[in-house]
Amino acid sequence: MNAVSTQSEPETAADVTELAKRALEHWGIREGEPELLKFRENAVFRVILPTGQPAAMRIHRLGYHTDAALRSELQWMGFLQAAGIATPSAVATPAGDLFVLVSANASVQPRQVDCLSWLEGRAVGARGVPLDFTPEQARQVFTALGRTIAHMHNVTSAWTPPAGFARHAWDFDGFFGANPNWGRFETSPFLDGPHRELVFQAREKAVKVLSEHERSARNFGIIHADLVRENVLVHDGAIRIIDFDDCGYGWHMYDLAVALYQNRDEAIYPLIEAALLEGYRQERALTARDIAALPLFSALRAFAFLGWVQSRVEGDITRDVGQRMSAIAADVVIAYLRGE
Image 1 (cartoon, rainbow, N blue to C red):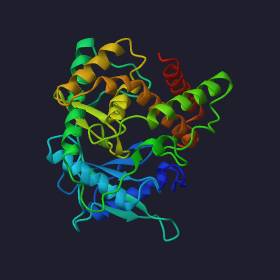
Image 2: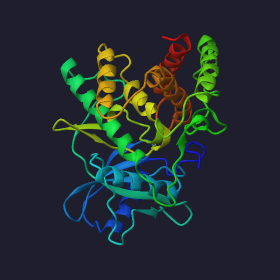
Image 3: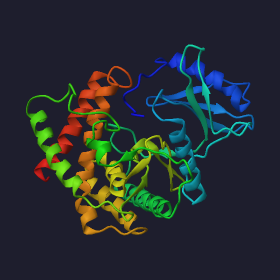
Image 4: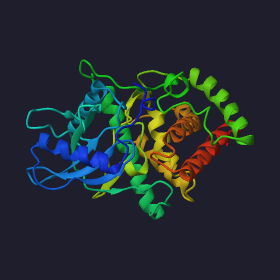
């Protein structure tokens, strides 16, 4: 099911909070209030389980994933945790369900709700806010992140998903097909004037290069696909990965490109990129062609963002934020066009 083609209901924080309250009983929670932490793709709440442990409850966006896709996300997370990668784990209900369907009333389509174990840690950063690291701290963090991403790719490459495993793909169609995962950028109201023409020229270049790019078990598999700063936690010097909502099949280099995307304007960006790639190489090989493709995958992230932004304006984000994010994405794809 396309992630951006369905209506999102309910629309307010009060609505999703009421749904969270209704969902608590499925986990045997009868005391305490859910604390809303994030209201974007999904509404995320902090709740306290009957054991006294905190957990993250997610009210999923209507139509964002099928039940099979959500179950597959939780299965992959469980596999990664068993393989030594610090991720949240699904907290099943007393009845053994990984997620439940909850609605406000009989006339409203039910929403998927799940609970994940709580992970302590400091996010690497936030969108649009300069990193708060010394150069040496940044080197350590991004080297460790590179190793973690490579470990994730290594263990997943040797994994056989269970029957019924279903996730979308960040492949050619996922970016440039009739129904891209994050929507079509071509109709974005934020592309005008000279930017628009250059972005379309960059698309032509990216389409040609991606259609000829190697796709094999060596460089393509299940990836996180959204390793932005907020989804990478640092705890006692170790990396923890959260928010697998966009995971699916894709090129490994896309994970690295996404991890670098928000850091392009940092003064120490060359150090960050070098550290991430060096950390990755400590666990998994990268060819010269892999490295040379990094600008392509950065551009693919930018194209995806251009589609994502226009479908979220006046909902998850304001027009000003949408304009700013689109301008950054346009700059990235234009730099790719020019070979910068």
